[in-house]
Amino acid sequence: MPIRSYVASMLFVAAAGSATGNAIAAKPDEQPLRIEREHHRYTVNADGSYTETIETAIKVLKEAGVGAAKDSSIGYSTSIQKADIVSAYTLKSDGRRIEVPAGNFQVSSNSGQNGDSPIYSDRTMLTVVFPELAVGDTTVLSYRLTAKEPMFPGQFSVIDSFSPARYYGDVAISVDAPESLPLKHVAWQMKEVRNRVENGRRVIEWQWRNHQPVDPETMRDSTFDVERYPGYALSTFAGYAQISEAYGARATAKAAVTPRIAALADDIVGDAREPREIAKRLYEWVSRQISYAGNCIGLGAVVPRDLDVVLDNRMGDCKDHATLLEALLKAKGIDSTQALVNAGRTYALPEIPVASMVNHVITYVPAMDLYLDSTAGVVPFGSLPESVAGKRVLLVEGYRDDAMTPAPQRANDWQRMRTVLKIAADGSVKGTVDLELNGRLAVSAREQFRELDLGSRDDLVRKYFRSTGLTATGTLRFDDPKPLEENFAIQASFDVEDLVIVPGGFPIAPWFLSLAPISGIVANQQPDPGQPAGESACGGIRSEEEYVYEFAAPLRIVAIPPDASFSEGPVAYTATHRREGNRIEVKRTLDDLTPGPVCSAEYNTGYQQLMRKALTNLRAQIVYLSGESAKP
Image 1 (spheres, rainbow, N blue to C red):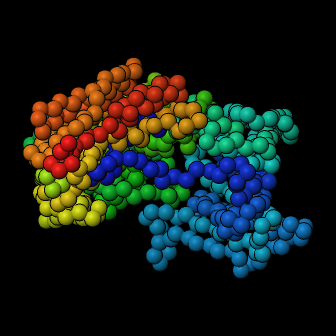
Image 2: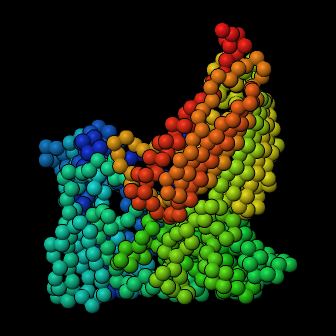
Image 3: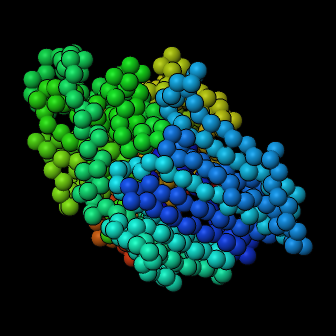
């Protein structure tokens, strides 16, 4: 993952680094499970409703896989779907078939009180526990999922893919649909074995197998393009414009200006008269006052709640946020429309238009050419979260094939840090840190500091150093974190006993406070030896660091790092070190103007090479001697 995606989540760092919390798939010869069979059969009706029959057979290869394969769960929406078990059994290694007994099925349902409808979800989870499972056995589960009502009237679409890093003994996909249904279809890296019309219905079948899975370390792309992988897509939508039209057919009416909405808009706007300021106040109110709550109740996945429900409970999902903001803006004479976008790692929509590929809803204000995402909750007016920036959107009103959210304005994302340290002969240190943040760094800091107990903020200095076994006192001051603004300033001071070893040395890095430490950014971008870089989401950031070290007279400085200056394309690193007696001034800058939002594997390879050069310079140390050790 390139530097442009790095934003520290921990504010207080002595030496920055990174760690990944996501486990990767095991190497092919280490996988504890093997998918022997995965079959999907879709039977589609003329109105878009359908039945999907799924059969899986999973073999346990290692003891670690027994727990993972012991149970399997099926989730579905009770109001519009039904699940039926066709068969479920453990196939022992000696060929015996042990049926799952009735007591080994667990059903967990979400429902309201006294028969009322639930407010969040009507999801039901049907879990199957396989008996007598051991290494060498295979679990076999076949079930039927019936969609009694399509998500969009008269429409059907589905997309799926399979990982080349997993063993698949046999994958078979079939679809049976009325010939009259305008069903588009495509498969990637799968073999079409059947495509014909029988009795007025078209039957299509694809097959794939993967008996030699690749090492997951070779799959380096952190962005996701479904067309890169074995998979398939089916859709009755004529194009993406029809998806936005189908969503808007039920969503637009929900944004009506009622007396309640009009009165609320007047109250929020107050004395504002200029349209942009009016839009800003409405956006900020929805962002801060309407908490997030998913809607997994049947068609609620694609239809907003009634706004009275949203306002009564002060919560809603992305559709509810966008609908409420649209209604409030309309009440003040500002036209807006909802926009569908992919909020995941996908930056390119497949040619076959599938509704699930746009899984998030935001707001577009045409008169201001402005996209807003109030669901994010912490993003300032006029900005977007990383997950939706630089992506194609489907406008509900005024649809255009080329509509895109703006790419992140990376010149706007920067940190300036000045640290002054006075190092005593006994190794104690008095220091101050002044930090200025802008853009996404400021947004991240404000979000973290909003949760901070102001009464104990100075105690954070003591606790931070205490966590490393040191005794310290200090103060911490910062701007009011509550406003949704793109700037933030923090000041800290600390007095730490025995912080450095005398005589000794240390690399130049933040000692207490930083969101974008250059040392951490560079360390986070080091290439994995022997592994090529992949495509990734990207963009730039600027981090400026200034350090002043004042050593007490008994100490003698014997070495400082060399200066450095090099660049690669739109990325530059510079470092200067100046010494006057026992005082050292250091200035370092990492200036990354990579435009993004996606960088190729070739670009990232060159980028990593520059980061390697920077790391060499960053590892150099200031070295000093004590009065005694300095004597010849």
